[in-house]
Image 1 (tube, rainbow, N blue to C red):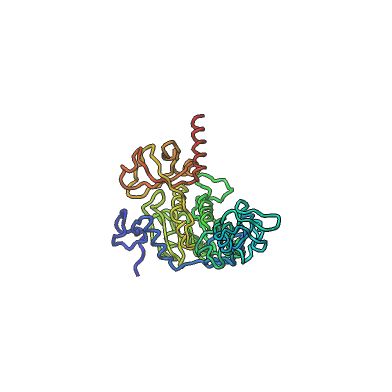
Image 2 (cartoon, rainbow, N blue to C red; image 1 turned 45 degrees about the vertical axis):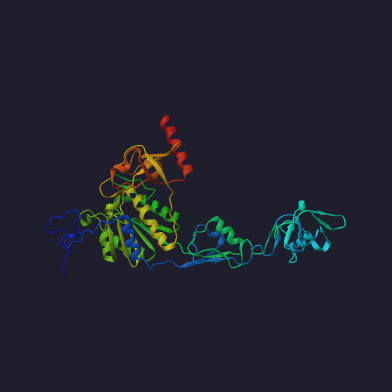
Length: 438
């Protein structure tokens, strides 16, 4: 049996996937982000989450597991939509044609708004269309339209009418209509469970003070929040040191209790030389489908794998790279299990205030400031990229830069993906301009 060669007999070069050396460092082809995620989704095509029945009051933002239909007609009986007198339209029409304008007491019925209209009547006369006389008869002043001001039984919602399809994310209007139609319990898809494992000797837990060369783990809370925002459950495991055996044990442990595993760090190509053991562990426990994608920051070391039939997302540790990889690759995995869109940031068109330069063949995802003017939105790159407040909190949007540099010259229009709603966007821009004036 051939032994893995850590240091090949000849120097490695970039893109060594076609070389003849039997080496664990052999690279997979660099894929586009879309092709990379498609490979992983194909590998987990048969994976689903089961369903559960929950109270309707707890179902906001949950995803329906099956179609849900009305339990009864609404209204349950034909009723008056205004105050008036209920009449039989055909009888009134015949009288009107004969020139007869008087209705006997038994030919109409006083009906306040919302009251049930008996089956022998089908139309409501308004006050201006009739006159009630002291002898309890009524005089027709105008012929009404048939079914005027009458809400027929089942005209709003019919018994058995479908209110929600399977795979719909429930909104407040959904909940109102479902409860209106008799639903109190509803079958929904279980929230996908996501385990998050941060790896690195340099990482310290939240609440501690880092020393030289150390950092607080902040990727985990971002990924957890993103997962919850998309409708999943997310759990953060204890930090794992750069140890091959401990990484492997942590991955095995978390795979047993999750639907999606996210591993942060240890995904570089240095492996033993630099303590990057995550990819090796994933190779041992499953199949690495992608190691590197044409997207930056972070794509160079992105890992997509499948282990025990479950998707594994391996992202680099630097926070500015982790947020881009998470935003691009985690929502599609959650959407696979929920069967509906869960992350739909608004896109707008912006005019560039300065040039953006493509970075090689990768899709570059810079963060932007966005400002609204009389002629639309303008945008420029944030003042400080990387692990900064500007990049994480001050930024208002992101864009994708790749291909012909002429597309990204000052004054050109590009698509920007908003990180906030438009009202918040304007508020942040206003505060930023006020601070610059001070």
